[in-house]
Length: 410
Ligand code: HAM
Image 1: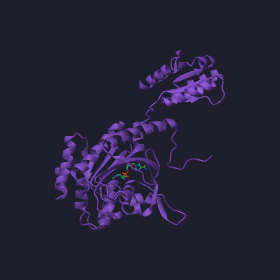
Image 2: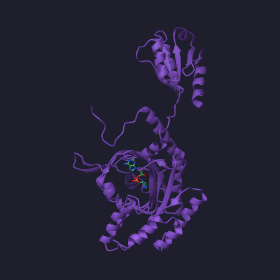
Image 3: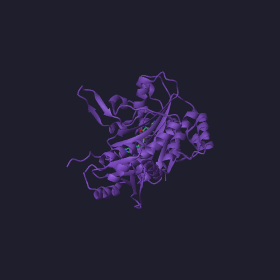
Image 4: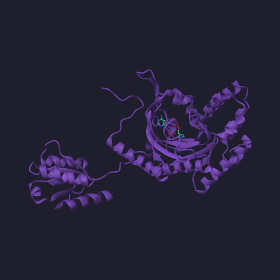
């Protein structure tokens, strides 16, 4: 028997309905904030992701050569693709651009609960706004979106300027390595890299920075930060709006393109794979042949949100099982059409079963049965049976539709 590839999942209808419901809640919030959906290809030129995505992601990529000899990669994330699209298609559009996306990404990681090789992100990118309010907007949107799903989480906000200040004397490649150690909380790796470049003492101030929880302390540890005013303004706006977060200057992010504010969300009820959101301010456009446009965005790990929410019952529209005798068949088809036009989920028997067997089958999945026999076919009425309590009445179709709809509204 063939099986699905490792790290991928199949989704049965109940789970898909629950996923679409949660996705819909995120979509609604994004729309209210003015973020409109975009879509990019599932694969891109490999170079797009090797330029600035960071070694971690590059090692995990699904890379292949097509029949024309082009080096391609399945997208491991969507930000780089969105910025490539912005340069190709929308460079001259009025700024800022507010875009969102919901799409699958592919990373060759070791699979476990909450960590997959194909997973979905709901993300947003705000392109072309370089202000404290822009940073605050993206963070407030992230919080609103997570709140809408009902997940309980901790939001941690940091800024890369502090760490970059401390690492200013190191080569950019060493800075990246140090930040990757901090991102992975790998203190041994950190110590050995710093020793290797003759800067073992930096570990002490880096540790102090990672552990400090107030802006004042961070400014004391890291020295003069050019973005000081903007950071203070952004956090001030978040405080004024009652956004719940804690400061964390150890956030280094696994991707290399971030330049300023960075933030991550952690589900309170998940274990190892509890990071459900990551984002920050970044600059990528100039690397892909565009202007040096400031951007800020985040992506929510949709599958982890679903794991955190547990078995969310799917939103259940009432279902009608249409049951008919051979004489009632033509009228039943008409009734089914009217019900479907009224937006009611209607399923007809396709197995040529008898009336009793049709009713028994309807009782397994439907909320109501509508029975059309000879009497109903002649009178134009329908027999509506509530399959939960067994109540049954013969009424006209309009009244039956009203009753089924009322069930849905409960
Ligand atoms: P990221 O932190 O690499 O950021 O991924 C965002 C989220 O995707 C993570 O917080 C996590 O919830 C989820 N995720 C990552 N890998 C997996 C996996 N193997 N299985 C399940 N979920 C996973 C980005 O991708 C950036 N593009 C975010 C961004 C947007 N920054 C600016 N704009």
